[in-house]
Length: 420
Length: 163
Image (cartoon, rainbow over all chains, first blue to last red; front, side):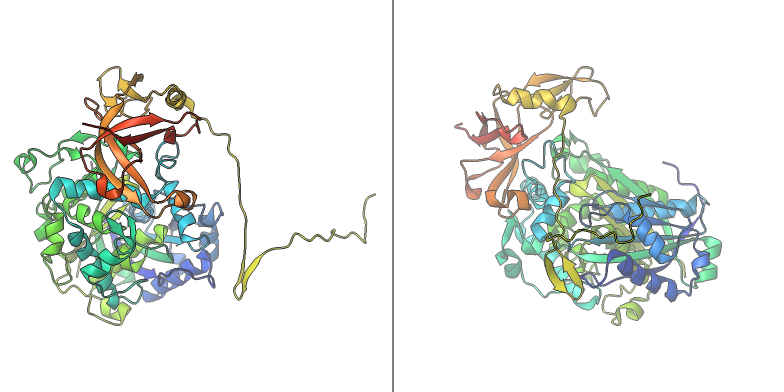
């Protein structure tokens, strides 16, 4: 994969507080609020924006096709170029990368990437049905029709393959809900114990209510710019160093049993008896990481990445993703969280914002929210935006954001770096 | 000329259900029947009526799928239908205590991924006749078929089988 093109910087971001339902605002106003926050933070003029990317997942939630153009219209960005990007849970990450491509290609100097989802127009179980329509509707939806069920089967196999425990999964929930106590944008800050997580209602064995993220209304905006424009607009732009994207089969049933695609810090002998990805791991996540690492020259992710915002729609997927990203070997994800390596004060803080589990998951906004939180971390401006600097990762110089669609069908990894 | 200066819309009583007035929140109903074709996968559903579970086998590279798949993901060649064994083993499982609205009335239900000997990929199905605590990875299961078809992948389901 060739990565040639202009340098791309993130220059500003904005997020609305994610919540279960905000009927007093529609999706256009919600994006407008996040957009104005981003625009005002660097005194950007609408005239400076060359075009945009719209990020939203489901047309079912609002029963409104072409919601993207309605936002473009409301923001005052017509008649500039824009397009809608969709790829399930990874919609936000894919849209962020599309914005990157608009700037890297030289087509745009400034690109606004806006994401949103309004999930409160239907009840939680209808919402789960809409999300399940993003599984194969001939073969998987009629049998299970429930994404938590699919991820639960992956978690059970991960536990069987590697000895991962439900208590280790619970540690992810405790960490992320705990971090969110200091994030004013988060939907579900909570102080939890292993008992709280295990005693909450079982959704799909082994995942309880507190192992699973919630439905949310929300919006997020990232402003990307070329090098010349970035330093004109702000003294503290953040470089988007590289991007990577991977895919896998829609049906879990079709996942093959092959060899692990190795990262620079792994050897074939590490995985002598492991059939990969099967249903225990996300091959798309590994593929995305490998592309992004190769382009950024990362050969030792654990020591070369300072913090990570990853797609923890389920506690199990956070554990699986540590391994895909090479923060530890396949099979070590459970002990990685148990030993506190992903804690706020750990070796590589993972989801210091609270992640999807605690911040919320308004699908189209989620991947962009991650970029905004990472941008603030790398700018060292968490205190300014959160009015609390507890979550500011002290040595934050290089961060990784990771967005993920249903059972790992689309996964994006983007590497971001502080430049001054 | 058809200009009518006293034109008036007829009054009806099919009003709207209101949940709240500030902001104004109303009920919006939506329903649709699709004319859905199973297209190249039709044989799979027809075979279930003959109590046969059909998978796909690549003509060129021989990769075997426990699912219907017109073309091979390994080499891009066409596949042929072939009959899967009636028995397999649980590769992984879960029990769903909640679900999508459509399936909520059926909870709790078990989902399994079945592995068949000599077949390269898995098959997802419901397992009945066992509670969550009874299900184990590696457990032997047997395919059963509905007599009255629903023309759905749930026309085949699995039950525990004796070793």
